[in-house]
Length: 73
Image (cartoon, rainbow, N blue to C red; front, side):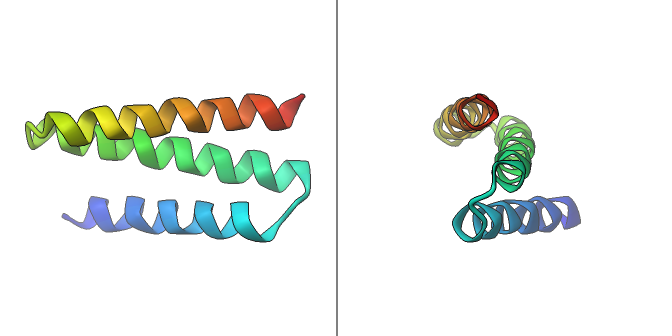
């Protein structure tokens, strides 16, 4: 259960970074943290057999990867 709080904090930190800093390096860090958090939550959804949440988190992961690629250009 403690793992979920860690990845909740990771998601919260990524949102704070993405909405506060405008420099490319910070944006990449924020999107990377978001993608790690989404993968962890996808795993938790898979373990809980919660398919709608799994699909939602995988979609967020793909968008996070797109954000990383976008900011690295």
